Image 1 (tube, rainbow, N blue to C red):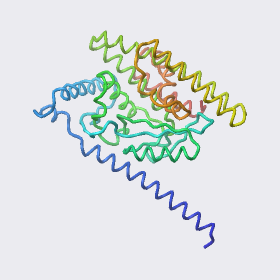
Image 2 (cartoon, helix red, strand yellow):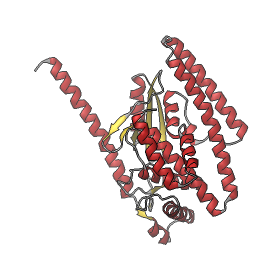
Image 3 (cartoon, rainbow, N blue to C red):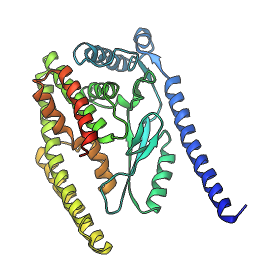
Image 4 (cartoon, one colour):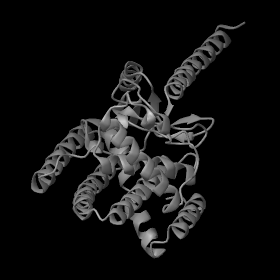
Length: 336
């Protein structure tokens, strides 16, 4: 066997081994989540369940039924059980983008298709992957994730990692994750996450109005206005950076001007937050770089398009779901 063929076989074996390790940690992590799951009904009947946890679980049950009755989201066993993972996040996602590009690095999987992040159930594993990508020259960002969807392939439980939020965020997350079971397009993370975020927004608005919680609804609208302002600032920065990366300037010039634009973006975002008197939303956390901008864009930058679609449907959700599916089918033949 030639030396070249030996090298090729060695690299192939190494790649398969790394892939196997990744899938093994994912399988172990998923098994751990499911093995800890307990039916919410049983927890509510148990005298040992703390009062505050019982209150939040009752809220989950109400929101879960609202999702079926009013939002036409799937009526299955997802989010009808609870699991305490004894940690702050269920997974840690790693995002990466080239030093001079806003196109995310993607990873492809048999069920989910190609996605713009790589998830790990152990934070140390995520940080090792991030360090490796950094050594390879990528901008890297890591984000702890309190919830995720298996797209209905398992009965996803409500997690203790979701219980640290205010009630409105807990309810919105249930709507968001269930929305992935309504519409999920392989190989388009931005579409999927923006669609689910839009459904969460729509659902939360309907939920609060149905409860007559006018103060909560006003606070929600205030947070949404701030989000729109922050997204507008980020959108302009992305456009400026895109122009810079396409300019053909030498690497040293682009590196210097990139850093200046990111510093200006940080200043502008802090100014908006200061004016609003609100805390920074969780999705804005972490040092800004191309990878962080990629992670934000997956959830936030396409929201306006879905909001317009909802209004075009005269706020009819069945129409909205149908049109959203058609919108993606059209986009697949005419890429954005």
